[in-house]
Image (cartoon, rainbow, N blue to C red):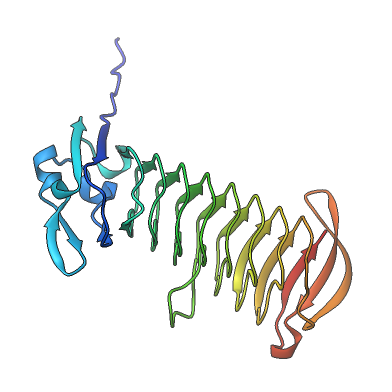
Length: 261
């Protein structure tokens, strides 16, 4: 008896920037959920707002498509910098995006599944309010990685974000879940107003954990300045390494944990 061999169809969509963009473009349609099963002509016809002007993806990208598949088997490749294309991968649930350059704000915001890799720099609010999936930034990142937008009580709730370079201020602001790892240094106040989740900073930072209710911040480098709202609580091991343990923010009765090497 001959066993039937299943072949999984894959779809690969390549977007190549055509023009230099000055006014930011909303790229929320650039995700596997929207591209899956579509032809190049159908993808080119998708909306892309340039400021308050309704345009299409064909105005900004050359598009090639190989294969046809469900979102989970769809990969999007962006060949080059898209420093004025924001909201790429917004709300995506499956599949993958690879950006071979720098990207504008809000990449991967409200992401629920799948993976995004940014080969260069990611501007502010990367992974904003993520709920699942994986975001990898191979270069540096701007302000508010994994944070909530203005007025939101929760930022990232699930999934993982890894920044291989440095990140600017307010990493994980209002974090409620998930894991953020910064391989380099961060700016001021990572973990401000946290209510869960984990932030790992392998480099240096300053003033971590202000107004933290819950969650954990692990700092493997040095802390230039501590906010005087934490109580020292001995030593704790993390991944086989001993860290000084602090708990707080005591001013608000918080039960957050800072582990400082």
